[in-house]
Image (cartoon, rainbow, N blue to C red):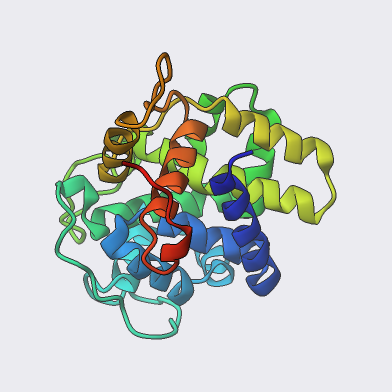
Length: 263
């Protein structure tokens, strides 16, 4: 188990102890919807529209109305009729989000779809653990997060682009960075050794995720140091998290005494 996975699992365990399992996993999942500049905004949405409120609102509400509720919680559009009282102000979003599919309002459609999906499963904690118990391969977990154009609402009141709110690549990121560490934490908390071991196995065998600026730079630097016959290119998602951990340790500004020599 890499340091990255262990740290994420431990972080989830602390969040679960502080907020309860469903709320902790709800906040962590919504954070996965944002690129770095907007992660805080999605956590604000998860706090404004907490899981207890979501679970009450979802009952009998069509997905389009639910999407309007989430849009309003994110600061987009008017307050829907009969909407629950929310806590705190709407987030301030960064304009740096790139493609239309990455726009916070589009991503909030995925959050609405998750709310409907996980409510039917008994909450995020139950949805996550049941999915891991059933899965024989990591790719079987993508359905927990992936949301296609076919089931994304775009009614007149929403004026949303017809793009996929969350495709397979982003869903895979959420599986590796949120679902599997969170389920591992839940298993540790409940002393379910079999489930904890299964979550680790699925993580260890998960295919490589899409590259980002950190992994590209880390690979470039480490490639300069590699020994004959060795490779600095990650082959699995576990390798990728290990690479990111090494890079962050090597470039840590907070602990310069712990920096690792890359060159």
